[in-house]
Length: 87
Image (cartoon, rainbow, N blue to C red):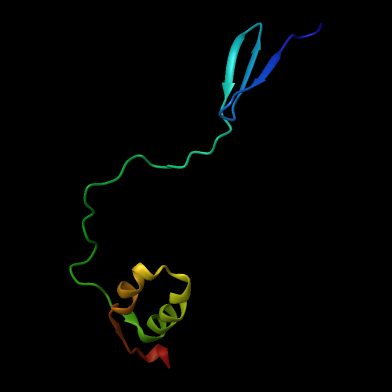
């Protein structure tokens, strides 16, 4: 038995199908905002920040060319210390 199904493209990129069961809409647009919940404040994990190893600090400095300039001061001011593993 043939099935009568109509498929129409919507202007916003979705599809509308209709058959004996009724209409169904399919939205193919990607959601640009994943989480609508944004916490007001996040409590810190530690009371004092743990310093990076010197090796990790210098590696992060090499990556600055790929990090937006507005964040450079943050990365340049990270605390670090020399560890035995760094040598």
